[in-house]
Length: 373
Image (cartoon, rainbow, N blue to C red; front, top):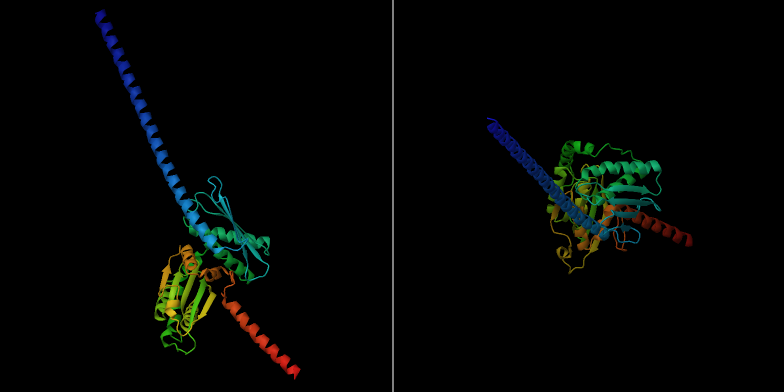
């Protein structure tokens, strides 16, 4: 009896040892699986992070190349840490304000390694002749504005917005908007007003009279606060087609229209667009090329013969197209940069000033002749 009892006790203890050993093995296996799963998750996340950084690096390179093509004058563009794998790239841009002499706009952009896909730019804007409050206001507005461009390259968009804010302050306009969404809410109403205005335009383009002046190929660049309205977008394309005008219309914020065609048609086209209801619409750049009798106007074009629409992210694309077509100076007028290479590119305002100066000279010369008599 005692012998049997001892034997059964031994068997129980052995079973306990075996079961305990099995449990510890299972625990080890489970923990090993968890560690492997964690490691796999980390590896996947690390791979994704590296892929994002590679994409961001490529996008930053393209954006920097676009800036280098635009800002070619000495002192305009300075880039630090461009190829540094550790430090953030820093961009300094110095612009002369076209509205006020001896006024300089300084823009500093710091590009985190995961910009634009995972983070925003770090921005500082300082306008030379502006007070601290004015500069603080501009910086505040820009930081609100860039929220619209998450996961997008936005340096050119910011430069346009800064130009707009500076211009508004100089004109003493009260344009402190809580957000750009307020203008978006009015789009439907503006569309109705625009449609009514379109229907009441007194001179329809198909009734336009033609003169027998020398043939001139004209190019114009127009800047708008935004192009969002479907009605405006449709008429930009429709009227261009009717008038044999080609070029590009970049929608979104800001809106840019660059067009090319016979002078009379182009002037009529711009005047017709100007009659639509815009928050801001300005013809900033123009080129007129007088053609000889043997020159064909269509062959002299450098832009497409039809008008094409570029999406809201198409600013860099438009910049590259203009550079390739030899219209870099015309594109720069959208940022109020004129005559960078001595080329005859003028804004509407400067053209009017030149006319006034010519008239004043004629009057003065007439006065001198009378005195001589």
